[in-house]
Image (cartoon, rainbow, N blue to C red; front, side, top):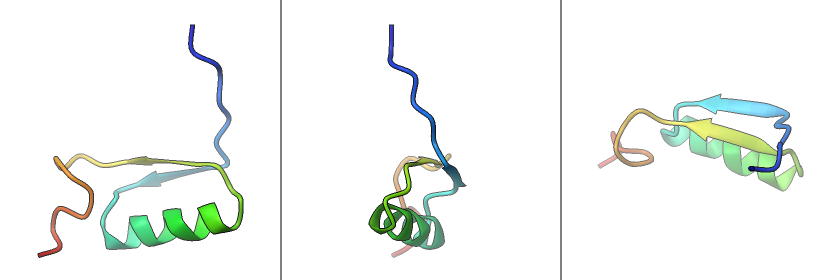
Length: 46
């Protein structure tokens, strides 16, 4: 059985903006969870 984790933030989309928010939240000590439908993070950045 997996341990239950509470997230204070959920990020929908791991593009440039989503990754930026994830970094800012991590620096602030806020636990987050990110979801992305593309096969890789920031897939639209070339």
